[in-house]
Length: 322
Ligand SMILES: Cc1ncc(COP(=O)(O)O)c(C=O)c1O
Image 1 (cartoon, rainbow, N blue to C red):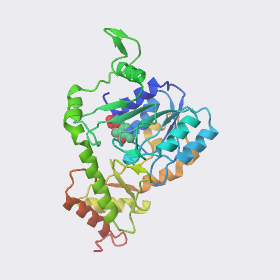
Image 2: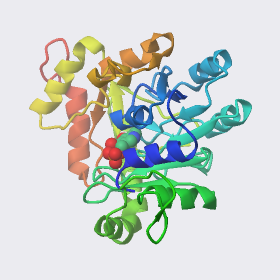
Image 3: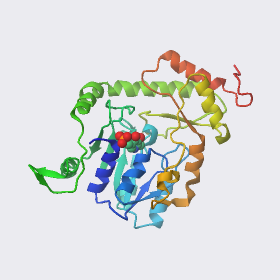
């Protein structure tokens, strides 16, 4: 398909999600995650995050117990960190859920040997250029093990086309551009494993080297093998701007993923959505989160430099302490 957004939307649509349906969504993600739900006329139900920014499956279970009418779930493997897929599977089966996994950041991530994207009836990924497996322009893919759903997805991406000049569904124009497909498949896919290994090595170097008491590195849950799409850390909310500025002044590209939870985005003001329990952890996380560069082409010197810059940050004096 043409993008990760379309992959999410078409997957949800094929699985019967439509106006008024409620969909459990994490409040911390790219806006596309909520947009896919809203564009179908469905209602995002935001459940709180854990301390590492991922959807809290405890919170999700609590909501599902209280709200048996909820049939859909759109979990995100944020930063490339797989959610607990065994637990996700139990939730899917226990509550009869229709699950679409957002794997835009989690290509090659797994949980106890199981790849992300294998629990949902369908899954979606993005080949946006900065993704672990990117094209050179917009692109995305729908993943499913069900040949019937694959057939439907192929029809939906192409005006609902089911035969020569025959259109059986109100579909989309979301074909994957051939040039982008060739770049993903022939040029980038063969290099993917090596790139992800490199991302993991960079993340390990940060974990081993960053010793600042002011910077908390977000942990990856036991059993989860991350694709390390991003490397999130948190600092005290009051110090976030200062830390970002410190990184910038030293030539380190810090990022924010994401500075605002999805339900607080201006576009959501006039849209039906629900925020379960206030999502206080997610809100606090957004105020604290900073991403460190983890691109596979960082050199050893650059990695060591990022570590040094982090360790040299002194929030009291905002001057180098070493
Ligand atoms: C978690 C997540 N979901 C969905 C998307 C949407 O993908 P795209 O930009 O290809 O529409 C992205 C990337 O932007 C993403 O990071």
